[in-house]
Figure 1 (cartoon, rainbow, N blue to C red):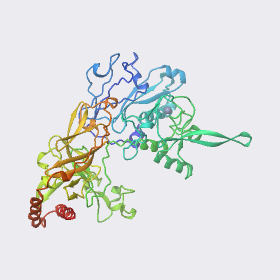
Figure 2 (tube, protein in one colour):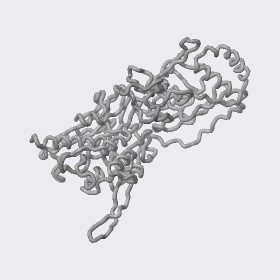
Figure 3 (cartoon, helix red, strand yellow):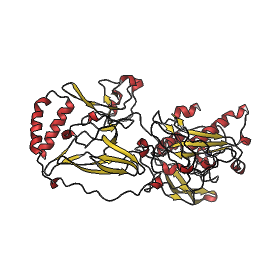
Figure 4 (cartoon, protein in one colour):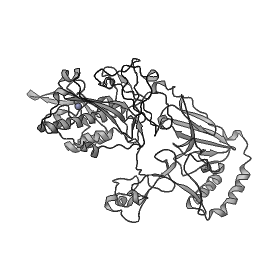
Amino acid sequence: MSFNDSNLSVCILPTSTIYIYLYCSTGRPIEMLADGVLEYCSLMILLYYVHCDFQQCKVQYFRTGRLCGSAGPPDGKGVEGADFVLYVSGVTTERCGQENIVAYAAYCQLESELDRPIAGYANLCPNMISTQPQEFEGMLSTVKHEIIHALGFSAGLFAFYHDDDGKPLTPRFASGLPAFNESLGLYQWSDAVIRKLTRLWDIRGGVMVRHEVHLLVTPRVVEEARRHFGCPILEGMELENQGGMGTELNHWEKRLLENEAMTGSHTQNRVFSRLTLAIMEDTGRKVVTLYCDTVRATPLQLTCRQDQLSVAVCNLQKYPKDLPLDYQYFDHIPEVSVMDLASYGGAVEIADYCPFSQEFSWHLSGEYQRNSYCRVQENQPDWWRNYGAEQYGPDSVCLYQKTAFVMEQCTRRMTYPDWGSGCYKISCSTQGLTVWVEDTAYQCVSTGQLLSVSVRVNDWVYNGVLVCPACSDFCSACPLPQQLPPLNTTKIIPIDPCSSSSSLVVTLWLLLFNFIPVCVELTDWLVDWVADWLIGWLAG
Ligand SMILES: [Zn+2]
């Protein structure tokens, strides 16, 4: 398995434990067969609900012949520190005989945020397993092949692929699911994943006929297909069109890639090519990126620490000279010339210059004031510099801001140039996750949902847009996709900043002028901040 270990990796929180929820999509109990084969998996039931509460996630292994869901037995312990749980069986099933196959596999369950498979199964048909040493290589490649199916190369998962930004490539309904294609028995993918094309096809007698093909068209697969075939206009990589359910669309086209390991049958000398690695990468299952690639610059682009409990900045920076070759990681950094890439790295040398999102602190005249950790109430900024309407405290977490917050009075308008994330209070209920801004509740229905925030504080109106985190990141019980209320599409009317008098103006002026002499000694950050405040103020 060293091949898979060295070539496939997934970034995931190291403390997470996988909890597999046995879900009844049809209302009937999901049962283990008497022989122990996890038939609920092969039913291709996607659902798939995972608590990833950082600490508390659990796997329930076997619930033979019992009702699942709330009526089922209590939760199991889960699998701690796992990225993926693979159930392996060696049972002669109907499918083994019918199709004369060596093994079959699929995913069982997807993680709720990026739809990454977190559990799968593989059944090796005993009558087809050989213990002959000369067949060992072939058997091993079969197992690798099956694992790659369970990890993502599967027609049932095409509709769940994400792009590099974590956005689904196939549109979703409010339920969080894509459309279901009854005739295929699969969730229907979009053109961004698979495209159907008609090729002109040479047959005997100099005749050309039309031949329909399905091409996988995700970016890295297209790039590798073009490279492999030396054809810069190739639209994508063709998928298998034969072999029946299970083979068709689930493999590379045998005619084109013959002994590639992810073609639908084993002929000879199986090899895994860059194309298969490309599709694994294009599934888009980067759960949490450990490393970041935003250069630390003014204004700061704020982000969240990996655990989403602290506002952070990517500590990628430019060094005066090139870093040692071992630590030159980047082929590309946005807005950095290729000539300079060798001198960019993370600020922490002993982290091998790997850049990561790091919390930070504010100093005043060299004296420590506060830091960016959301859970500590003492980090709460003074109200007059709380430009993002943030709230620090034990129930607060770091949320992304889609736009910079605007602070408004009737005739004044200010924004702060450093933005991107902030600390906000959240709570959990049976409805899911709620974000609180100045005692106003905003209900999150889905991950990535945008919340238009408009609140009034001390005669100032704050307007901004926050991004909903995954409910399962913070709440131990979250509604299932189909239990979610429909997204409230009622437009929130922003508060009119002129609807109240602004008696505080004078006070603020005084405050600012008092502040200026001190500013000279402040860190760059605060100098910038005050300068900007003044600019905003004067412009207002
Ligand atoms: Zn296969």
